Image 1 (cartoon, protein in one colour):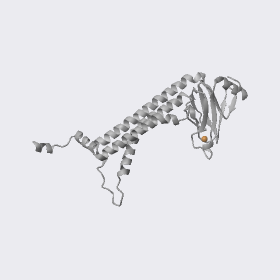
Image 2: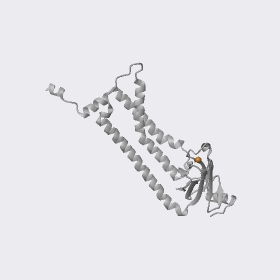
Image 3: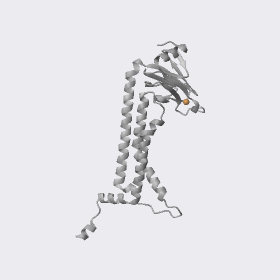
Image 4: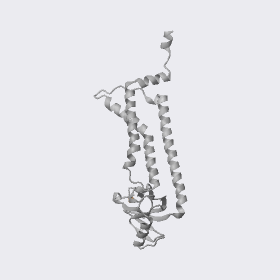
Length: 262
Ligand SMILES: [Cu+2]
């Protein structure tokens, strides 16, 4: 009877249990849990604190997206870092390298579970991104009739803004709170990228085509406008400021700059 038992091959479950009992695997998994937890906390608690102030719902949804993507990538990053940490702590030093371990690419369970995990995480990211994008463009279409039009021109290395309905041009981006705004963006030379940081939007500024992007500022505050496309020697200095202000203050600004309230 006992001889029979000895001859039985271990089931996949048995092999997995033995695998989990190994000292190196336990240490690696402990490190993986530690790093994963670290990235989950980092993404959920600190990222949003370090990000610029949010002055629109688009910026809020970008923040949420960053947090969710950080959480999705946390276990992958945790696993890679844990293997690196284990190797670093126990790696052999000296002239004679240790013998290779068994190859992981022939381990069906290992390859299948890694593939499935990567697939599920990537699909989650893609689907979530598409849903966010769709709801943003739905909102843009709904807001279009009441929107303020701002023509944005990128040139080496200055941003300029034209408000056609108000008859005002400026190098600072002034926006009234609560009104949807459509940016019509183009470049007079090379490719730039229009990035009003606190609004959570970014769009290419090209020479031969006008791109447009829509958002609604929902909070008062300072705006930083930067170029997000490497566009030459002074690319890093291609920035200007602006503000989201009360509608009455916006109208005053328009009149002070020789325009008329639309
Ligand atoms: Cu630029």
